[in-house]
Length: 151
Length: 151
Image (cartoon, rainbow over all chains, first blue to last red; front, side, top):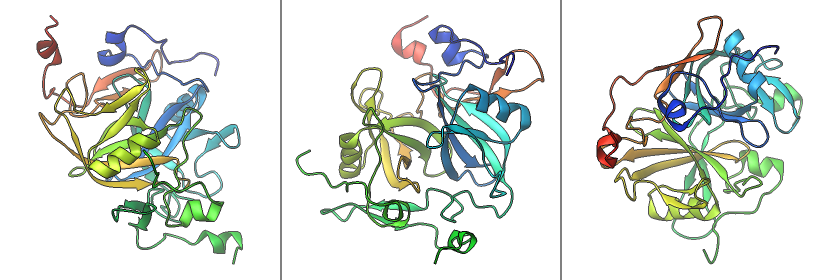
């Protein structure tokens, strides 16, 4: 973007309690974005944004990320239809993380595996041995195997 | 720890839909942990854990992190009393992020600035000019200035 609407990092007080957005991007130029369902508060996914993805998200009201694996911009839902309409963006005290409150379009799922949330498994501690996972979402919203033709 | 209960990373299917905990730690050996209030679902903070902090958290039921700024283990609440009792830990599809559902002890605040959540400000887009922040929590739980003797 030609002119950024993000402010440069200021002193500790202005970052922690001030009223200017001064996001801290990590060594790869990214900030963590926690995505929650605006209606239920459920955490749906964690994504990463660079400055331009954040500005695109704010300007368009739809969530854009930076794909670390593909090293490219990624508009969530562009192919799946699972577009995230952004109702609110929060930042934390040191402005190095964001929370996006969204509603999900399309089939309402967020996870490419087919679940509503990417966080569909909990850790089970039976006391010894390898730690196990157990599903907390009983049913998938859709079966991507069918969509993608896998058996 | 002498023997880890974390499994090594497996193939894509076992990571994404399997029942073994195979966390992915980044180049600094850390995984992102999103902390939510077990009662309300509110996002309280984002922290980072290395393998041992994760194992301590699972074993003790109280949240341990790795402090990136201090480069040391950090048991949340050790000095403030704002200990996080962990009710559930979820992992996402690619097992590179965690959600902790916690209840907060002590005065019930999480943020060192005094608010219940570190995410106490939202981004306001007035259409042009620098992006502004506005508080969404009207009152602090406590005033750390008083606690720490600052004016």
